[in-house]
Image 1 (cartoon, rainbow, N blue to C red):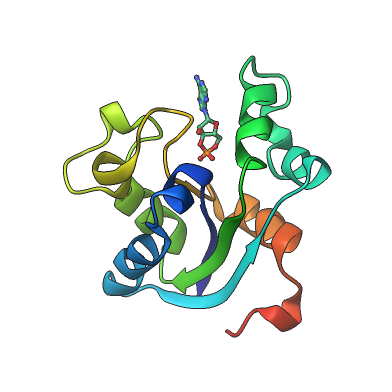
Image 2: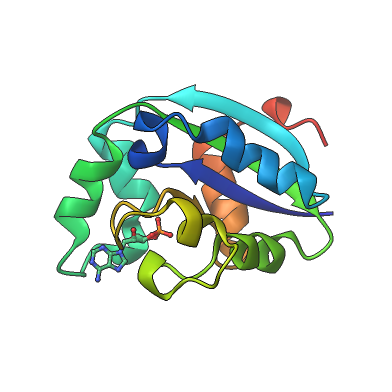
Length: 138
Ligand code: CMP
């Protein structure tokens, strides 16, 4: 089964939305196979968001993701990467479709409540940043 990394970001943590967001993914038939709460340090955040290193918003993005503890999870299912991205909606909540997680909970493009892997290849890399193979109950 395909897997994807999901992060519940600081804006959602502060508004006590973590379990509601995880529940939406489970209700859609995806299986939670790993879960942890952590406070990312700068080095971990820069590694996770390395693909955005040259973007103008990189510094703010790293400052933001390390501003509070977050929840990291791995969800598995057929076509999990695309299905989770559909459930989350567009990166910018203002452009997200009705009924999606970011439309319902996101505040703006930075405080967009969740992160999810954008390809199966990146999912493997991202999951490896947060979890050892023993922590994934597949
Ligand atoms: P995420 O899925 O975590 O991946 C990278 C993040 O960068 C993205 O969600 C947004 O929160 C953030 N991001 C993307 N584009 C912009 C932008 N133009 N300005 C600020 N933040 C952005």
